[in-house]
Image 1: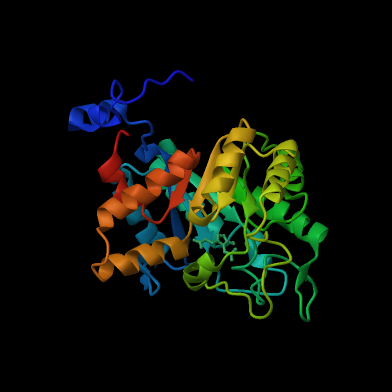
Image 2: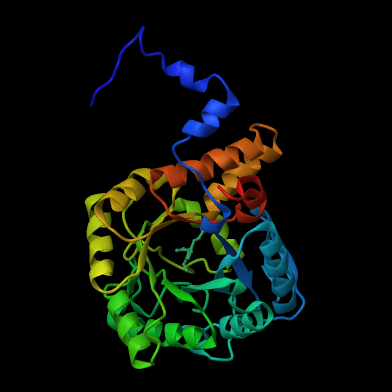
Length: 333
Ligand code: PBG
């Protein structure tokens, strides 16, 4: 690299005016890249704030519809849907009920907004099982281990039902081995070969999911998720997980959480030629909101800096609870 040096080169020359700063900015985030998570309850009118996530809500169908209309006006049109069913059992069987909460809201939003919106469905069982784990349990006791292959078969059924009800993208989040291959073959056999898969490929066993478990009413009733989600200390393992998912047919991959894993986002971006998503998770949102509510940080700047850093690290798609507040600030990139 050729680089002049001081005094002929003065880096600050380029920072002297807003015009120069704007002209030389290296990365820009656009509202199109944001995905807003929605928690849906099988009710018509319902809107309940989530205690640990100020200004985030669980929505009934009619309220969700109104909210999506408002989001579109703000410049957000991609949504990640989570269902909170009334019925839970050991298998999570309401997850593949075609009259269940997610198929119902998919049909309703599609009818109201057509192709103006992009609907992504989180594909997992923790919200649907009585024990709160992400699939069928094989072994309880000290370590909870999932029954992998049977859960993958259920996952494929869930994805087919969601795609038939109008999902644009299915996003499996259970960290099951072979989940992408199982889903791809399930979708293809059902004639849904055009439905892409966004795989939560490198999903860590993180403390930052705490508030989500309140939002989705999905905490594990015993044990933890360390036998299926990744150890936060691992880096190479994330690359092998991503490689596995791409070879099984993943169209996009995800790193989750985002902030404590910016290095992983960058490595995945450098190593693989597919769009990379990052999930700016509930605990990351809650920390920032708590500090802002106490007047300890400048909220708008902190949000923009946070989202900008995730994008700069290599994320093309950002799933974030800040989407609605941030979109008007960054519109157009
Ligand atoms: C699992 C799922 C989780 C999140 C998204 N999908 C929770 C978990 O793995 O325990 C977390 C999202 C967040 O914290 O914002 N269905």
